[in-house]
Length: 341
Image (cartoon, rainbow, N blue to C red):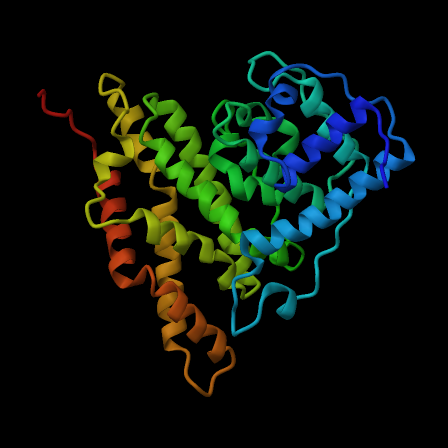
């Protein structure tokens, strides 16, 4: 059976499929780097196809990005109720903005929504930014001020979102609501934070490095405080994933700011180095939690979860936590000029 939609509707559906991972971004570059007129309205066939794309694509993305990881021999869909997939007119506004905006250029109109986005739409934005990473199109979307109240998007892309303008405030993290999404997007969070750590090494401007690090630190501080109060330490495991991949024995403090201009004022360079250690400082919090997990006795409530976290976080282990602490100490020190080669 062949379903007919207009060309404009087909373009919007293609962008939706890029967001959920059904279409590679490179196959849709014409729609991303040029201004394409979005459909004025969606016909019933296009609406049905969009609903199907978002529903099936979101579920598949959650399964692929972290839901498949077993905890206590149970996948995400076996241990938690399925999160509610609610998409509104703001989804069409997002996709229409992507179509009408040449994302590779510097001059574009702001993204505007009507009302609050749902968590499903928040996750869609986070997925889309990640899908666009490396195409030169992600910056225009990531730096939209309309996205700064979204907990999942902000948690995934804090550094990228603060490259132009720093955060005035961070979103509130409703742990009960976002927990299944954080678990389902664990691999995405690990990739985006690891990518941000790598990107810092090539930042030459101290003020940019400071903005990125401050945004990361503020978001992580709020997130870790929320999950600690809710007794959901396992939601921070993506940071262990980052640490286990990033903290190799040869990693040095100078590498975090290797491209930073040495002719910048000492105060700015000192602040930039200190802010660049945001993830390392968060690992210090997880180190304290890890010690608490190890102290849970067999007869105590939460013993099974504590043991799972001890085993899982053991990939980073005390060696990794100690290395993170040493790097924080080194980055907090006053920088010196590099020797001339």
